[in-house]
Length: 98
Length: 487
Image: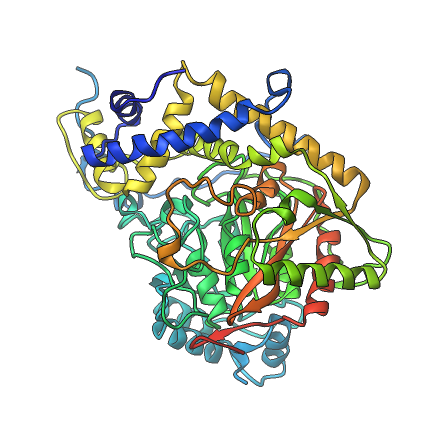
């Protein structure tokens, strides 16, 4: 397992495209000491590695097929109301491909 | 008594008999919302609510929610009205559609008068981390005590008598814990019963829609009205919703009730323990079988770390769309990543960022097997243990919280090793998806506390039966805090 350090926490933060102040990273590092102790409690469960992982409480399956139902698309103006960057009736993005 | 202080059924009769009108109820609710001193709201929908009340049409004798004012937590999408989940990254966001539960209540002509504040993105349990600051417990006039979260504003608005019910969401205990602190009934039916379409996701494998109300009957009326299959939610259950829950009685004779020993024996306030013991002996006198049962201690100790690992990991991906570009405060950068980094760094509070980083750490390739996968395995083992218990019993009954609402200075949202079991066991209902309801149990120093009831998946009937019996035993129904006094 990756050992906790400020560098590791920064890596974890930057993976999610967010950042914090140095003080906040320091606080989080101290919090991780408690957290990792608590996470050890998961590893302490007898038989944990022999059990199956559970993702959802139970399977929810739908067996029926529905008919296609035509719907009006959302008006462009409504969609664009929520963005601050518009160009030619589209959401304008910063450069994506270098 | 003002009609707004009544139960939903009483209010409905008054409406049908013409003793009051939707516009009277809505005006009174909005007046009270405006006078709120507990920081319960993100937005009061005065103009819209009054317009809806004025144009509501003829009374509907068979529709209990016709003309009834309510409040929705601000993480339910409301078409045309700002929805922020109390996060700065969503300031100004106006959804393009209604959440299914909002649409259902609109169709039933219930009238939403406000959006309630919450812990940011529903990721907290204190009611202190929303972008509008802390929400106060209406029972404590000095504003020193929290109401809990994340459905803080929803609980405060019902507890303060502003509306008879509110919608909340519950990923760990976010409806049922505030219910305990606020003298309310907090109900989350089985996972899949109520559509989550339009609810901002926190951790979808754990997220539930829930209801806060002042009586078991009121919570049941609302939960039943918003339950049912929804093709827009891939996890929605097609299991038929019982239409006779209003006929359920408080007769617990023959009912087999399990009390998990390690939970009641974990640190709890003495008064809560005493009241809980009184309740169980009263239930026995009514013919119920109440037994202390064991649950593996290693599993109980792992509840919180499993929860924090799974919920934070799921939250990282569910909130990846909050980029500040398509919606939210406009930011810009030389690249998409730079723009997103700027928006997310500025838009999320410190707590949220910490939680995301915990999730990101748990999902790192080198940590995933030891943390995330093991947490999923631990969850499976805990649920298997619950099923083992419920193989012999109809229900599980435990105190909902170890204490009355804590003072702000006594509790923070930072991780704590204290009360690892007593403060976190309600998440068992989220791990398993089992129906779970908190009901008022007593008061200490004028502050309420509750008890929690949980049954097998889709057995809401059993939950209601015991909850009604608890309500009868305690006599604590329709509690309301007005200016710090219990009604």
